[in-house]
Image 1 (cartoon, helix red, strand yellow):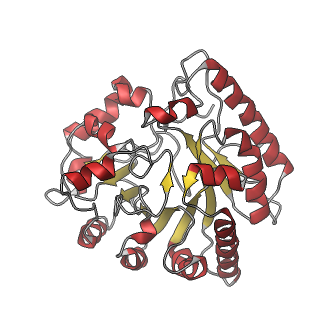
Image 2 (cartoon, rainbow, N blue to C red; image 1 turned 90 degrees about the vertical axis):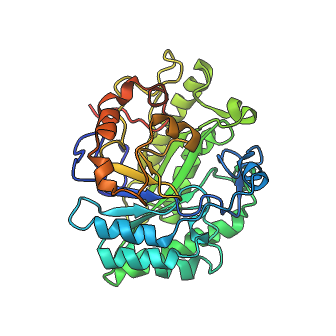
Image 3 (spheres, rainbow, N blue to C red; image 1 turned 60 degrees about the vertical axis):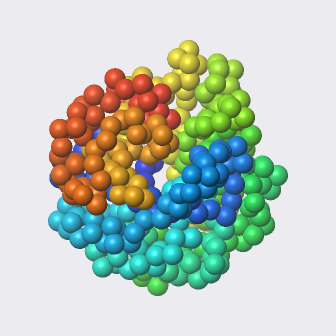
Length: 359
């Protein structure tokens, strides 16, 4: 039976946590720029007020200075850093300095790990693939259904037929590049598990296998808005029971549907919940981020994890990378205290991203 698998080279749980620095850094390059309005998105959902509130306050769009990324990568020589991620909020391919990020990855010998909505704006899938594939470890394409109706209901503004063609094109370029002796990046379908789409998970796995998509991963819904609270599969015991049944069906789908080369589709974060524990991630689940990964906000603020911005600010003020080195923050008493005591924090206790410890 297929087991869940993590990102390329990613340490499991807190094993391998390093005081020397993160193995991966996410830069929030352009969270305010997106061409879709996914219903669950913290900033771009039709239910979100954040963009209008920023406009009413006269605030500019959040766009990171490329020199900050250049500075951090220069400081990271000789550290465990081996991957960077451009913004996972908004569409990173809309960042005007994206080509420079690709060039910096090549210069510093680090891999790019990309999350994109699959529209490949501006250049199209083929041109973007030729730029992205050579320096990338994993391309996560947001994918929230096995049917046109579901995908377009969740990811408002997307065109199912067009993104299906984009996936086929991207896989073709990736495979040709690998066949010629170049880098073979992994391609992933990444879902947000919710009432609208959870039952289609086995069919998403079948679709991934058919298209040559290596992995299916996801996470449970952060219910930012009252309008989508009933979408959470953690909301009550009945929803949890139905989710747990789909986990079994997903494992069966992996066995039945092989990739073109005979491999199984990898699964990640697809595990059963305890219906008697109010939907909490299983007892003993560990944070996959503290001591391993770092986040940098568009203005340079250090963040310890990927929780929604207003929530992760409650974890502490650790400093700004325009004023202090990331590695000074990494070794600071404040950050080390969070690493040691995060299980006592209410936000961490209910976090969707914690992972069960492997037996």
